[in-house]
Length: 369
Image (cartoon, rainbow, N blue to C red):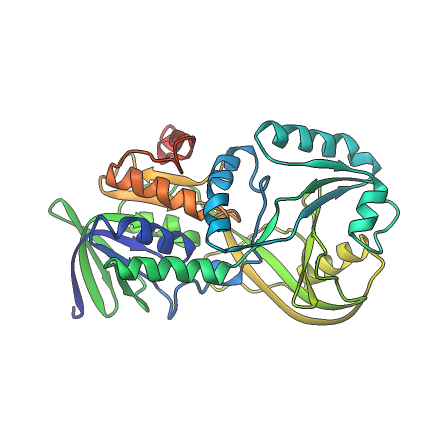
């Protein structure tokens, strides 16, 4: 085996948003190796995200992470105001009202919307969409900018990045680990599993029990429409989580909000899912689709309870989980990475993480299963 990298305190496997943000938080305090299987970091989920920061996204248990991350993202210039509009039909009125009540109680800012208010925000809205919830704080995220920020910050503070390094072997060596890939190897005291869709596979290499983190495929389509979407069109979401769309550079990005079970790999959209996305969009507004210009898919990885997993494995010493972040991993990255670094390094909480209940995200919650 050639290409020995050296000895590190922490080897983080996966250099997408999760791994990059964790490396940036840990590198000032430890010797960090960031290992990426692909040619470039962020090739899979991070590089394919249509991410937005939305206070309600991910459900009530994710709100503390989202709210704690908001200030960092705004102050860093990573957010662009958009606004979000969750819409429903007459049969959905009680659901929309409960949505507003639930998340307002958790500190989110939401306003019920009448049919007239919704139509003013979304020109061409079809008549059967009559009730909505307005989220004024919803914003677009500069995903690439945020990812590069974290990669640069970790590099400045001494972390080492290895790409084209798909981990093939993990074994105990003394109190630490030896990690090997085709062209090299390294040793580290702790492995941080930030492998996204591959998190369970990586855990098995380290001798740990998989947690049931499942990759689910999400489809995005870019279309040219008549009329073209106005620049200030909000993010529009179905209250039943069956579609969303937003403007992007004079075009429209839309999704059927699908979560199709898949396998870890280079995700590709299915024609049926593309057709469903377009059909659902056409049921919302009376716009014409002039051309289907792009289509792509990404994998969102969820634990069985749909909450992220942050913490040391309860059975395998020196294995730290930072995975299962679904579609909310980017909007929660600042608080999640800070919290995970504090847990990993044994540091006290700070102002960013003080109100977050780390136990809710611990891998130990699956130990009984």
